[in-house]
Length: 215
Length: 211
Image (cartoon, rainbow over all chains, first blue to last red; front, side, top):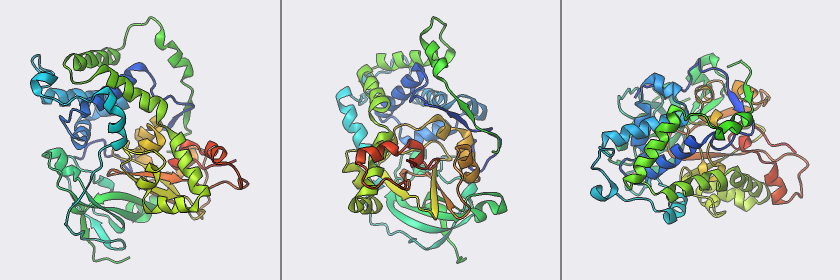
């Protein structure tokens, strides 16, 4: 979705604020917000792509003013409500929810949630291929930033088949796709106005077309 | 960008945390939500404590610093890191959430690397812990891909024009760890001493390592 979260290249967000000796959490509510978000995620009522979609769907001013963990709480509440999890009669027992036990935390964190999947689908591109990012403007979740759409790049690396966030967020289907690091020149992205020599992003095959233009 | 950074020291503010002031809206809201989730059995209170403990006190940039120090001193490890950073880093005991697919990117005199997540705040948790507020800020997310040299200058890092700047936007679950250049005059240093030099910002790309 073309919402405010997709901010690569935007101006106007003010000077960087760098805090000396910044603590991991600035206050107790941030600590709790972090923990309840991760623990609720472990009940698998939504996937990570759906969680990102929920944050991106917040009204623009809310997103900009809530602060980092404020966004997490707004989105968490929204997802809980959407799924009826806050209703009086809803609870882990009645819903048959899997709850993350304290003794299982360490292993769960060490394992994480890899997104690579086995499959026989052959990648369409290989390192060195010239590609052009498709012009696309889905209203639903995507990980194709606006600043790259329509731009010409070179495939830098192939990462295997990975869960495709666009479908994973929308329908829950993993739909694994070939994932590539694609390299762009700063000049192709920004003209004479940027100071990056090169920018790369990790893009799924569905975001890309073969480009006839060889640089 | 172009304005000077605002460098704050919030130590004084957090000292007032425990005074008898009324709770703010967000504090009440989070407390209420947490109680509700516990009451409904969705989350276990000890699970919450374990999650906080892990990221506040256990996982952090000292992990990444050890990876860097080892890469500097052990060429076969450096090769492993290039071939399969996830496995190489896992061999040191660091793995998992938000680091399932790691790539190590080495700084050279020719190329300086900077990592960002323009779309949210993706960051290699197993080796760096949780990201600092500036990394998650709209200012950094928006400017890093278009004006990285200006961003670096904000951090006091002035790179020569002859050094190319490459920005890595973490748009998928691939997570990037910058391997900064080893400073001169550190030959023969112990792994511990070397790791002690490696600051968190040098592994994101907003700093370099010096003696």
